[in-house]
Length: 595
Image 1: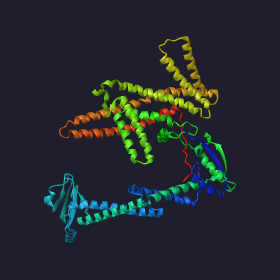
Image 2: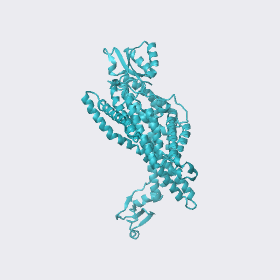
Image 3: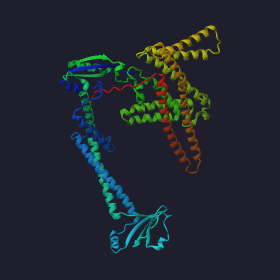
Image 4: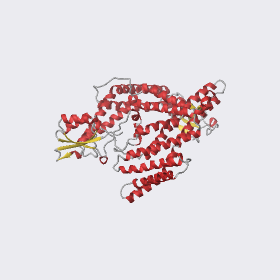
């Protein structure tokens, strides 16, 4: 559900306004929509860049932070930490680049050999130059060995490196001239080791800085964010009346936090006016669901928050989403892995992450249950296991799974239309709900008279009732789908009929993806098992190969299938279900002015 919001307007003398904002930010219950700010003080121009520097510093220090290290550096300043980290990081990058160049030069010098640079210089003085070349084996001419003072230094299947000695200025076609580093191999090794030690020393300093300064930087960042929010609210141009002598602030407060605000206002004798929020004013949206529904709120927020006067659909799509995930994955073994993995992982994660793992547990239970119904356990078809011959009939066949997917889809679509009725009753034109009632009546009449009572004979009373109900549903759809004059409502009704008739069959067929993904996951698991058995018959290494194929194959299948089992139910929820429930969305989140 959506928590009702109350609109508060506070009126204060301008000298009292800054202290009031401090108190309001400390309370942390009022949502203030500042819109476009006027001219902000120079302090914002200073704090904004500082925020960027601190965030960049935290990003640099994050790899070096030890979560178990509780060392604090309360006596250190954020600016000092930022400057120190920037200097260390600059030195670290320079040493890393130098180490790369030294290792590259070392590798090249190792190929050419640790020759004496003094000797090379002496030879050059008397006119005997050394030219270094590299060429592919195809372009190297063996006749060069007899025609020139040439020595091959290195040779492999890809390259030949050689030195030409003397005054020859002959150009070797297809060869590349090289210029090895003049430093000797030993010197390059020593310099590389020194650069590595320097890198280790800098990284140790960064580790110390991260562990002692992390909370200092985080707290400074939070303070800056709170200060920027305060400045934006304080300098909001709509807040001034009477040349700035009177300050007016408007904000939204959820009814669940209203008592806390009222107590403060009464104790401090603050003048205010209160009014209920209306859809035209676009109050912020704060969701309130039970423990089960809260687990699915992050999924709902991936699409959009409901508008203020809309129905929150989170608790309504949650059971379907859980069922769809299990339907798409559809393997009891995979369900056990998800359930056990999420249960074990919950012991080692933060409280924020624990809710996602609880969701993983629910998905594991759903997958296990659907896997049992479908008769699949790590790709093994349980119906073909001799020990389970007595319960073979309880497992659904492919055609039954296909039918079940369509039935579940029809149930969710009808349920969505029921919710649309409830949603439309909350809107400014509640009579539009009669159109949705008309569609429900149409489906009910068709189900009863065209399917359930089809073989019971056709009496005159039954025919009259059937015709009357069809006509009533048609009139409700035709005249209550839109607003305005009767002619406009008729046009809206015809358009609604066209859209629903052409769209509802497509919506229903979309649920076939549940069947398709479940079958695909099972087939992949079966193929992995067959490959493992086939390769596992190899002598000596067969059991090892069998184990590797089973573990790697099923892990990959679980990862890929889990992704599909999450994405496709999301599509069914946000497209088919939301559309039939009349969801519009566009709500802005409740973000209280706080520290």
